[in-house]
Image (cartoon, rainbow, N blue to C red; front, side, top):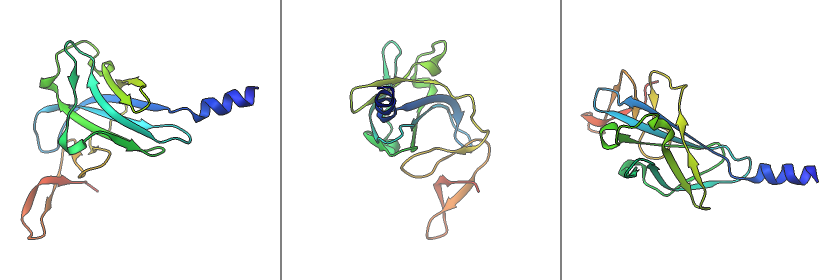
Length: 151
C-alpha cells in the first residue's frame, strides 16, 4: 500500500514558482521576473495564467512570453512585468500566482539565489539580465535592439 501511495505522489505535477526583482542589461526599468519550473518526475505541465494576487489582481501579459506555455520535465519558463505596474505590497514576491491547465494554482516565493547577471529562461529570444551586455548584430552587420547571451 505504501508503494502505491508513493507511486501516486511521484506522478503528481510538481511546480516551483520564484519571483525576484532585476533590470535588463543596459539599463531600463526594474522588473519582477517570475520563473516557473516543472519539477514533476514524469508529467508535463501547462501554464495557462500568471498574475500577482494584489488588490486588484495584476495579470502578467507579455507578448514575448505568451501563454499558455507547456513545460517538459525540468523545463523552465520565465517572464517579467515592470515593477511600476504592480501595487506596492509587503512580500510581493509571495503574491505571484500560476494557474495550470488542471486547475491547480501555485503560489510563488522569493528567488533568493539569483546570480548578478544571466539570461531569462524559456521560449522566445534570449534576453540578458544584469550588469553588462554584448549587443547582437543583424545579418547586415548592424546592431539590433535585442541583446544576445553573454558567454
